[in-house]
Image (cartoon, rainbow, N blue to C red; front, side, top):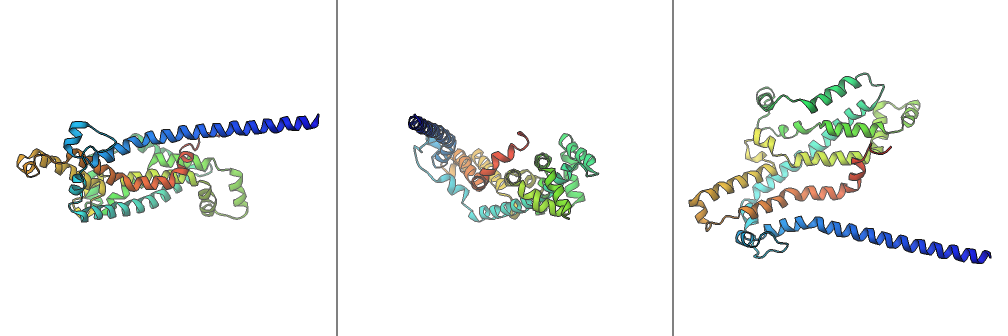
Length: 305
């Protein structure tokens, strides 16, 4: 009787493992199919960027180019030095801004998460107030150019995005979820708040820090507005603003019959737009690949207890 029971349990266990394996395969298959579907827009953009304007006008956007052409990339890379210079400027601004911004926001968020901090309520109100009101574009422009004297200064590409209140609130929620008993034990052992912050709070908040770092990196990398307002020196153009200028110049050339006639009356407007998307999004996509394992966990901080 006991042997029969063991045999039944073994068969039941094998059946359960087989069902679980089939379930995992089904889930993986669905996720792979969904991932391939998500790649379709990327393939459409890539295909359009290496197509001719005539082919796009005749056949629309296809997964494979109907007529292969590198005219869009040739147009953008007509002066490769300016593209490389813009990449260098944007990379330096993004690296410095993300590093200092993440440090400042983490320090502010940690202070706001501590109940015993005396200035917690005034600072929280001050931070939240900036989400509701701002001084307006004209006062901001006058303040930057007249008071701070930052026109044509690379600092103007960094300072406005150093602190995002939304990211501060996200970090504060993460720090509030840390076990208070652990922090009290560190204080009893003689650790000050700086040591607790850097050696306990920061290592335990890696997912949300990586998420905020990605958000901050995107803010800097995708910015062209500050360059438009405050940068006249072409050596300080960001990659996004440079591509914006290329697109604007191309549209003006296309609207001028004399210039358009030199290119056969068919400037690569649509294909250049698609090629610009790859120049702009490439490095950020690579950064996401390294940080994506923290991303979902980071943005759900505070949603579960």
